[in-house]
Length: 116
Image (cartoon, rainbow, N blue to C red; front, side, top):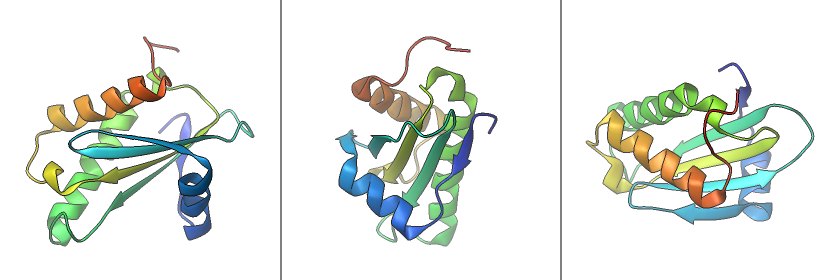
């Protein structure tokens, strides 16, 4: 991802959960915190065991990461984002996951037309 890096540490996720704002739809929950410390976004993806076995969870993670990567230029910079997958996302296509991600971006008002 050109303009982003991953959230990896437990404390980073907890900070976004505590300080950030959340919106949800049928498939995903998105927490966003405007850290404002850099020109990069930091994104973390969480998929619990309620979604399915490890194969299913990993596929959902890849779908969300790819949907974000291909639409990365639409998102504002300087954000910390955590995307939590809901059990309903199991078995959904890439198009449905991408649509859900962009819908949440519009709710947070962090996406627009191509910003690059």
